[in-house]
Length: 136
Image (tube, rainbow, N blue to C red):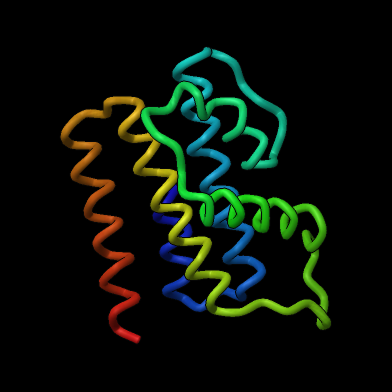
């Protein structure tokens, strides 16, 4: 899930498409928690709604800034599904979205008590994200 978002950033896919990929990755991470914990599959796409429904079962809560970023990503997903010339996207939006993606992934990983191997893979991806940001 993270891999797709990282690759999209590395090969220079447009900002709207990167945001869509990041939103999808966050959505899949949250839905995977729901499937593992409750055995049900959700049909909603709004990450904030999914997070609100499971936050009491997570080991901790996300930061307020991350919560508002989820709301922004959901609004972007709903309103700007098909980008047009007049839409405004910035690199800061991508950075914010990546930050939320990493934070949500870490939170779910901690709550699911994943294996050490899975934790190492996640840490490696997070380090790669941090490394890429330092290159700029």
